[in-house]
Image (cartoon, rainbow, N blue to C red):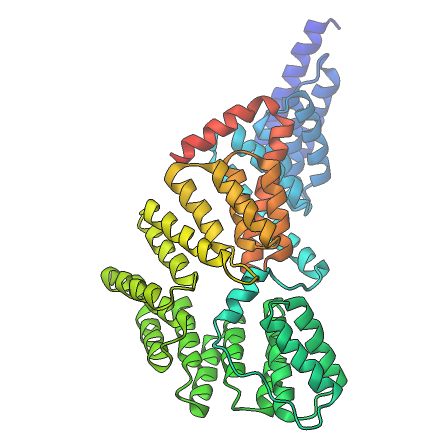
Length: 493
């Protein structure tokens, strides 16, 4: 047969295949499409894609064959959206989620985000892939302490207590415990964690000391994301010394991490029964109410915490923030001004006040407060609080779209605290918005290693995988890079 005759015959065979497909006679349709492929003098991606559709609808579906046929179709036409969607569906059914996300992402972008079905498929499979990757990360990730910034902020939320007094004839474990507490106060957190574990192994000679050691080890476990282990240690601490208020307050935080607010409030009630005048109880109960968006109750708790101890800066700060959330803007600003005056050597009031100013888009005033916080921090003994640097970066980016200085400030923060999650998260978003996908993936990957809670990890992994899929699209369709940027900008507008 001549080439023209073969083309005509292949077209007729495809038409017969279409008719058989419409009649749901998929085995017959597969035969016609196969003959069309064999007959045609030039490979046609449509023939392969149509045969793939038959394999999808066969009983049982032959997903491996779908992938093979779509592979052939896409070799001939890499922008064949229908083949991308079909292969994505088959890959999803085979549990090959990463490849499925790749295909659905490519189909969505090639359709300029106009195909709702493809967009929904990306979200659906991305959710499955995120869950799969999270399991792998959690199974293989070694427990580790979070950033110095995070630990310092957590510990600062508890009022200072007198240093423990050792028994007259202290054991080796007793002395190691004291060293652990002193290392903690010096900001040497990894050393403190090692020492408290050694102290417990060596043996502590008196119950109050044992309770303190379990409180401290439980704190570290909580910071490392081991909520169950933290709960066990803190409960053992309370069994030894039920008057240790800090253990009650911390176990309440653990209950919240385990999504049990009722148990958290019960822990606060127990603490109150032992010491109704401990300011820490009301401060941390206010934190729980704040998380639950019960801002009125939170404001009342912070006010009580302030009344019981006027020298604890964080009660004042959170009281002002709760007022702000309750739309008492003027009162909140006045509380902040009083707090900054009362605590002139603390950076935290300046930083948090700057955050509220940033929320009001008073950018210049916000940057001034962040700069003042940084100045105060520069005169302190390390560890240094780098959050004002990150906040200043965000303010300048929102105010002047100055991505260069914003990135520079975040990198400065990482030089001081290499595992500052706020700086890494901000850099991942800054590089993503610039279209620097490879850099964004790198920062997302770094964040997966330090994300402390599962919701935080889930969000980071989802962003990382979605960005990887976009990066792979650019690598596979380099001519579409400029168009992808333009489409993204139009969607943001």
